[in-house]
Length: 120
Image (spheres, rainbow, N blue to C red):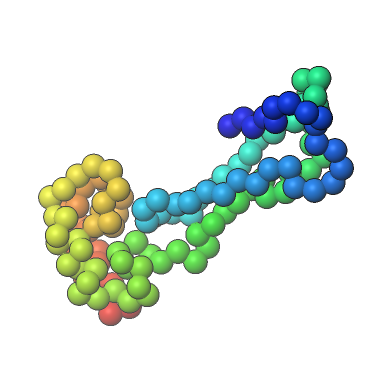
């Protein structure tokens, strides 16, 4: 990702230079970890400067993610979770809510997993 300011003088002083917001699309099955390993800043003459600190360089959202068998993430494993899995039964590929075990296909293993946690 690159950001540049065109024309005029550069930025000077203290404050926030950039802020990036990420949005999770779909239901993550595991916590997400973002690391910004190569952060470079340049001055107005394109001379590279190293930032002293990069706040928020490691972000680990999802500490309180619902378990994957709570398919609709409502806090209870119930008939609605089973219906979601059943409605996607036999489908494979990308972001399927019914793929509880993350193997890329919605099948009997997903139904059994949800059923075994029913009522939690």
